[in-house]
Image (cartoon, rainbow, N blue to C red):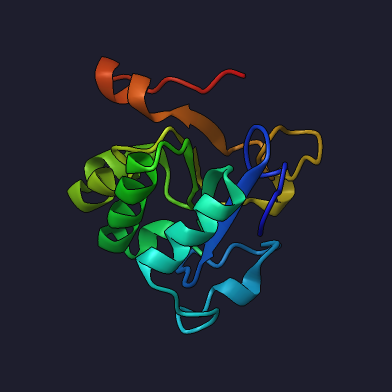
Length: 153
């Protein structure tokens, strides 16, 4: 989605990645659960669109961490291009830091919005997330302090 303002601060290009094993009841994007859905694009094609739009980027889905190696390469290319990168994932921060492949995938990101969407905790007034269990995590500060730090606007 080009030019969105609901997936992080400012105008952003949201990249929806296919595949999700969390399958949260009430998910706003269940068509992305199938890893074979969507349009296959190369890294170069994605970066070209991001450069054309010239916005920061949010990775959503599905779950970007379903394929952590490819997500890591995408984030690296986005950061090399000077982009602020947010990731929405159904994994919690605690799960991410306990799994080296997931931690490697997010280590260059700016913010992780963590945790599954829980329909009973849905709150339309929350900033950049759907349910109150989800947290906006400042990745760089959390990694440097070895303590979860929330992103503050």
